[in-house]
Image 1 (spheres, one colour):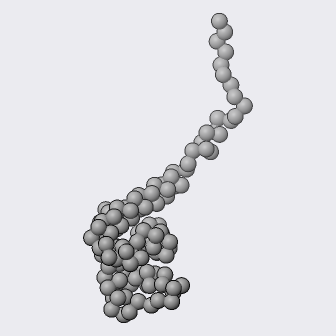
Image 2 (cartoon, helix red, strand yellow):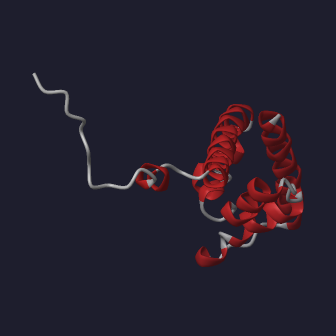
Image 3 (cartoon, helix red, strand yellow):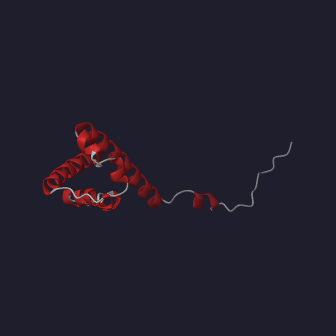
Length: 124
């Protein structure tokens, strides 16, 4: 019976290059936690404000039109203002030649603030 050792041609440090680096892994985990918190906050928001969820303040809006502001929030922990989110909500109507009335925009600012409060609560 032979007691030979198994050798490979790969260098010993090759596995270290395959594994994610700590900074990359931390960034990925931070984005993942943020997406999960956003999903929970939206579920809570949609249950409390179904009319607004049906008025295109929905998951698609958050994943597309509001994504840059929310991505900045995820990366820097600098919360966007409710006015910024409401502006992004209103701009999605430009393509269909509809402009929300001033009262409706004011309501959108309030609702965006509520969503951001839900999101902040989920992030804690």
